[in-house]
Amino acid sequence: MVSGTNNKLKTVWICHFSNADIRSHLPLSNRKFINIIAKIRGRKPLEYFDFAPWVTNQINEFKNFNDVELHIISPMKGLKKYTCEFNLEGINYHFFKADLPLIHIDVPNALYFNRKPNFKLNRYFISKFIDSIKPTIVNLIGAENPYYSISVLDIKNIPVYVSAQTVYNNPLRDSYSDSLVPHIRDVEMSIFKKMRYFGCSGRMHHDLILKYQPQAILFKNLYSIEKPELLEHLPKKFDFVFFAGVAKKKGIEDLLEAFALVLKKKPKSTLNIIGRCSTTYKVLLDEKIKLLGLSENIVFDTFFPVHSDMYKRVTESRIAVLPVKLDVVPGSIIEAILLDIPVVTYKTSGTPYLNSEGESILISEIGDIDGLAKSMLFLLNNPEYALEISSRAKKFIEKTYDNTTNAKILLENYKAVINHYFYNTPIPENLIFNLNEFPIYQ
Image (cartoon, rainbow, N blue to C red; front, top):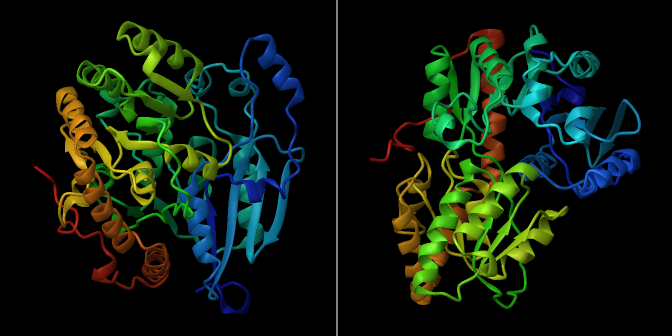
């Protein structure tokens, strides 16, 4: 088995993430020209912001592992140089410039991706990094992002472990998503067909991957969750909050309809919507809000560049309504729980898991607008019960989603993959995704 320096396990993550600390070490453009174009077109200026916090959280856990040499390969829009490499707190970072000009000037992604680009330059950078690092294992985080995930199709003689953030080739996406991009589906499917080792956080992704790759070996892979710092409990300005990418699959349109029903009973109720939203979809939502007569009761916050600032805003609401349709257990639900905010959501393949030791969140069937509204009203009218389930949920999350434990399990997954790939050693049963732990909820 190939190892890193000082017999450390040499590991590469190929992913896309951003946080303020990392950005402070990168030579980033001020995007002056692009923002001039944005201003001419009446768009907001492009800003750098935090995203994919689960990657940052997982990196923080791996900093504590003395037997791992971790290398992060990631695209970074706005780099002044083609590549930038540095070591920070024992982690090796390899960034490459991945500007996609058409996307920067707000041409719809589908228009770009439908051209089926092969991302030759991105693949070149990633391949050069891997050739230089010579890792023992590569972990792809996010097969649904072809601008970097396509690179694993070039990897030979190194085991690749694919962590599922989502499954783009989900048949339900036809109903629940705003737009579909054939090229994303094609690249993800090619990865499913070629790779064998996958990590999943829930039953839906497990079953879909096994459907597309019957020879897959699937591991339990819970992401390291964002644990908000203890925040001062700010005065409540809103009754409800929604925070996520503002998209149809996140249930925002259902929430607006449910909120309209709530207003019939509680006409002074308020809703704060927090999240990034495409310009065209925002126009659609504004029309819907106006049609439903909600304009005076809703406040939009497009996004917060720093994640912790968003948390402060979230704590100004009494109840989080997060009617996700395509996720398993979305990070926003866990974040709301850790912020001591009771949650109303939809029944996915994962959300009932949070109620396995007593009701911790209120769940309605997907598309049940009346049920969603009733749950919102119930918590609004019963603050003591809202506090009870919020407390129960937090205890469950803190016990079940322990970041250090889950990072150690991920490391054991790597070792099992390496031994299976190079020596055909059987995968330990305790690492295989356990269907009994994640049943199909009827």
